[in-house]
Length: 394
Image 1 (cartoon, rainbow, N blue to C red):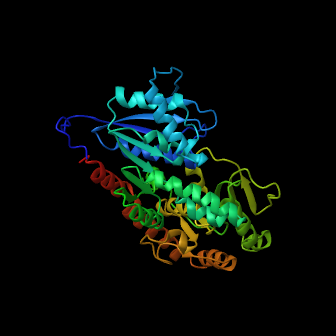
Image 2: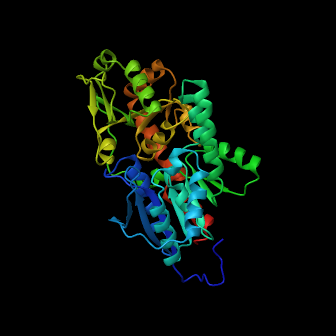
Image 3: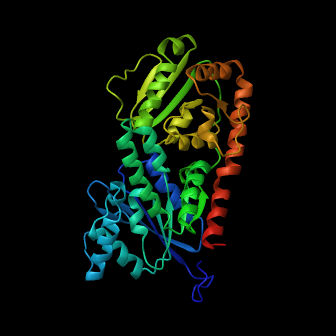
């Protein structure tokens, strides 16, 4: 793909990395951004130029500096911008996609001789549509399925799903799509075959690259078991449903009798969520590594075919005990009771926690098995090798 006559091995390949801007330090989205950069930084042949876009204000940041200068434009630029904008009915695609930002990115690609544009999440996708430049796109989910399951009104659900399907059609115009799970890859591959597209599809949970160093803190089980549920933002439906499920399954009485402490993490909690002696409500955590230092077990239920799946990888690769619905980990070579504890119902989650306390040595062995297997499957070396093969960066 990059084997042009003037592209000698000694030359540096310039990659434009585009992601949403955030003022937080080490939340989930920030880890996505960092992991994407760290993958690219592994290759000596690559020079990274990072652009962050504030999806609220539309402000564009180049190397952490706000860009205010508007390059000169031609009529053809306005035509191309309008064509991209009007052919993107899904609002998520158009977040932050202003003519000014379109022009800045286009001119940067030309002036810096960019060879690859890597866009992170749907909201930055349109900026990757550059002529004669390889576009690699990181997908957070196959959203048509999520819309069908998350919207209660069937007519509205079908409408939103169709809008998201049009977005998938757009995404398949990229050279490569990085999906977060084998299941999402199957969905993309199904649509790809219908449209006769040649898009490359890879499973690459980018966020996990950030956590793929060896765990520095040892897991030791105590009588006061610390349990964590990470929901990010609870105005998102699948996070809120999962939160209510966890609270219904693990009430204060159950936690108190067993000397368990449930730590809830995230922001925008529902107003009826109250802390107690055994339930601790934590707001946004600036450094997510602190969460893994303080907790033994991590709970991941399964709702709406989205969101929670990416949350299983972090506890696994950090060597923590994971109790989750096996559908959240489908497609990967993780085995029940060897790498994780399977659970679907509330009683399954309660019994899983009791099993951990009654079989502490086996639980510690399970967590270590998970860490080793996670490094084999989604660790640094595997992701780097995939990226290298894809982009001819050996």
